[in-house]
Image 1 (tube, rainbow, N blue to C red):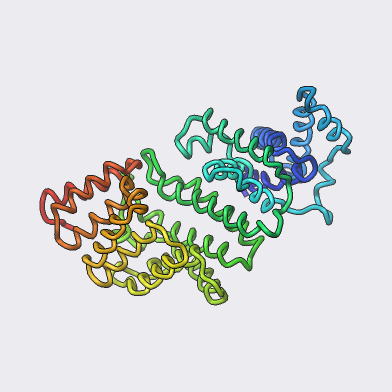
Image 2: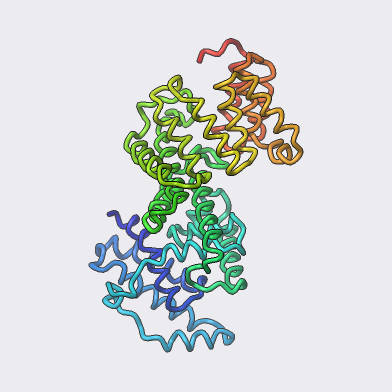
Length: 417
């Protein structure tokens, strides 16, 4: 395993050990980050040590000692407690009944309800993903100082909320697990279609979301929604290489070269969601989204897509987890089954709903879907206007150019496909 991948896998384990012993997410996480930086430098010169986990724990513990010794007088009580703890040696962390992976506990802590979703995402990528503040800042196109403040504020909020390192109480476990899934879903989506910037995709973020989802599934193999989220990621990621042209431009699903789809990922995702659905008593939103993705991925060409099944799954998804975005997907499926007017009627109903309209009025996807349905209906002028409106609201450069291109194609003459 490459050293970089090994460090990312070990980072939450090492942080879990320090948190279990000493608590204090801000101190412990800073110490682990410094240990990771030391490892990246020293291992490149001398090679990976025989016990890399123990090496990291030792270095991080020493750094944590330095941090606590440097704290002001108001921290002296914590410092005294810490220094009374016997030092850790690499051999002590190699095995034993108390030696276990605390990554799931750490995920729960990073997704504490006191934090906003954006702070949960940032802290998860830093503490669990092992990404540096600079890497996270680049991923979300914000200055490093801004991201550092966000992460620091998140740690402070967790401390002020009185959170301790340990599994959440049974009463809130399910809610916290749903927050964890939502964070991983947001990370994956940001990587699959970046919210801003010149690149359509951020493969580092999709890879990290899949890695953490796999880890979560190994920890909670019986949870249907965990399995559903992992299956959804695999089935979506399978199309990655086909959705970007050589010049970086967006290729929509209907126009993709499906021979470029990753059949191994499709097989894994399809098998996972099939077994999950077979044993699930209650279908959650991630399971249903994965099932929709599986229908698309199993079709050898766009004409083979079972749109009636897609529509039925969207109707279930709308009942289980209603949202304007789900309704937009349902409208497209309805148009493919019943004709464009059926889809346009659903989009019109969304526009007439005050709550939905507030969310969608400035969202490029709403106008892009309406444009697509108008194009299907043969109303080229109205479709052109909607594509241009969608382009105006798009924040990703590649999506904006695609939408402008569709508008130009409709305005200049017959679509050449």
